[in-house]
Image (cartoon, rainbow, N blue to C red; front, side):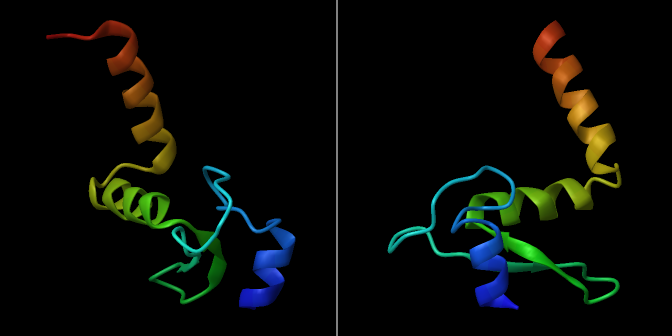
Length: 75
């Protein structure tokens, strides 16, 4: 799976597209509920995906709220 995903993703993170190298290592991402492999992420994207999931919002809802926040800057 790992080599296939690395080749399929062109050696890049599945979210931000950063190129994996000696400093940025690929991490195998998977669905914690099903155990199903999804692809490879850099550590920043892997961490962010987990934090977003822990908010209780869907990723789309979180992205929507982020966009609204950045456009309105309520503070």
